[in-house]
Amino acid sequence: MRITENMIAMNFLRRSGSALSTMANAQEQLASGRRLLRPSDDPSGLAKSLALNSDLRRVTAHVDNASSATAFMSSTESSLQEISDLISRAKELMVAGQNATSDGEGADAQATELRSLIDSLMLVANREVGGRALFGGRETQGKAYQQIGGNIVYRGDHQDILEEIGNGLRVGVNMPGPKAFQTVPSKVRGNVDLDPLISTTTPLNDLFDGRGAMPATIQVTDGNGITSEVQLGGAENIGQVLDAINNSGTAIVATISADGKSVELTDTSGGGSFSVQDIQGGSLARTLGIASTSDTGTIRGFDLDPVVNENTPMALLLNGAGIPGGLWTLRNDKADGALTAQIDPSQANTVGDLLRMINGAKTPNGEPLGLRASIEGRSLTIQSVHRQSTVTIEDAAPGGSASQLGVAGIGEALDVFTLLERAALAVEQRDTDAIDAAIRDATQAVEQTAGIRGTYGARARQVLSMSENLRDQQVDLTIRLSDVEDADLANAAVQLAKAETIYNASLATGTKMLELSLFNYIR
Image 1: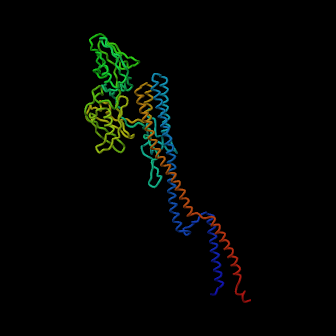
Image 2: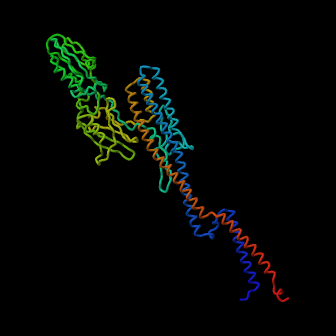
Image 3: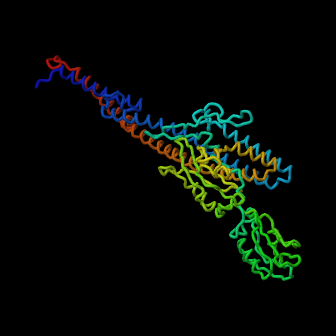
């Protein structure tokens, strides 16, 4: 084949241009640090780059949401811890106030500190993070709680703030105020002393509202001068005390008084006065109120005031009147609907039977109402196990046993502010019954707050774990995107040097070759 000068020139220019293009591409990669500069550089790599960039933007958005959620939830967790600590301190002050009711100055100081704890709780309730109220629900602007007319009022809503921290995964990161500060669920507080009578089966330990009577030996002497030591050291109930006295060999007859409240001794000897006394260092006779000498033939002891517990027969309640028949309607209204059931308390033989009947109440379709009945002091109390609900107890017919036991009505839910204010007032007034009730409420508030913290803490740990996983994904996607888009700088430098060498050699060779012409060969 004939090689012409034109062919040589065109080949020279093509090879030089190719080397120059390679050198320019290598220089651009070194200057930008990127391998993919235009779609034509690597069409398949560009498709991977677009997909990875989309994933990275999505994960980065989730990382930002998770980071914001973690900060918000961390502050909420620490606030819940403060609430728990403040309630625990309030309970200590209530106990101290109960013991200081005879010391006006000490009680007033404790009431003052209880009210100062309300101020501390208000600071926690209105805490903000990044300009957003922690406990205002979705109403994140402004104070969650305000004092209006002497009452502390919630000004937020009950909605959750949802943050998307994964594809289709949205987590509530906040806690509306009522969930954090309404620490005592809806409760119907019985306002009637159940006031049971004693019976032969009443344990000595149940007397005097549970303070009990210590069994011991007593001495009885009838009107004829017959004396007997009655061994009661092993006695466990009223019936055993009565039997031992009746079998003592004297003419003294021991019974339960006609009103069912005390032990009554009658001397049937027809003689002179008779007496009862403690011996051997015991105090049972004095405790029962029968340590005495009588010229009338009768000694009547104290009102033994037995405690109300699960073993108390229903027939002994209300001074032995018991409770009439008739159904109760129980309601527990929750945010997702009202639950209703009916029970028949007349079927209960003991107080424990009644408590179990209420606790096990179910709707007609078998759904538990979620009630918890208990004896607080000497009254029946029924409350919801759900904090965001309302309990209602009604008699199916007017004047039924719910009304007689003092539990007919709508339950009250207490927030911690009201709880502490009532406690402070009870301490100021030296009202031991009210202080006892406040201590029970505070105990429940501490338990509820612990449960709230546990549930919320589990959610916070989930968000933190997701945040860490998202950061790992972000790093992994960044590395994979770098592998697709970024230039290999060492390789680009080698390619540049190689292309530069080729280009320079091409120029030098081409210059010498193009100096030749036809006249060089015909001279």
